[in-house]
Image 1: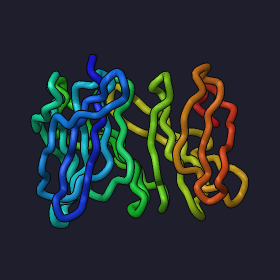
Image 2: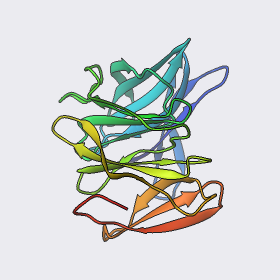
Image 3: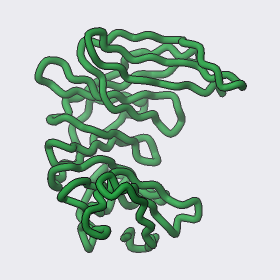
Image 4: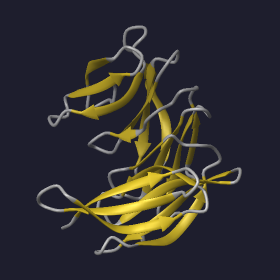
Length: 218
């Protein structure tokens, strides 16, 4: 399977580019897709066959789905109105839902992805959090989701995630905080599943969390 580097580029000539990566690490551009608005965060489906991109068109914040062909071409398959400006997108582990975190809108959302990998269905979950949400990811079991918040929020929101319905519901406790002044921005799971790491934007730090796989809590 070919490895690709997919990039969203804003400015006077907004576009999405796809480059192949050869065995020596060199890039060859395959696709240069012009956009009618500035593209932002993007996500790739677990099977690597579908791309999801946030695009701002006038005053609308849209998410568009594309099928990635074997030669790196992008074919538009659907879109949905995000109702805000997401700063991060990801899919759940099944590839059936698109999750969004919103820095300036203070929320987390979930939108359905159909069997063909396309967006366009009715939103399944809208969860207000607080300003400075920066990232969203489900855990390895796909039963829980986490939304780090930077700056004064300085916390990670914890949700239960239903991979059948696409619903997010607050976990207990609904949020946890690192020491003051850290500002967790992104997170990743240790390969064992026992630990989670968050990087502190304000603290220039890494915080290590014990992870309870049964309860989904940091």
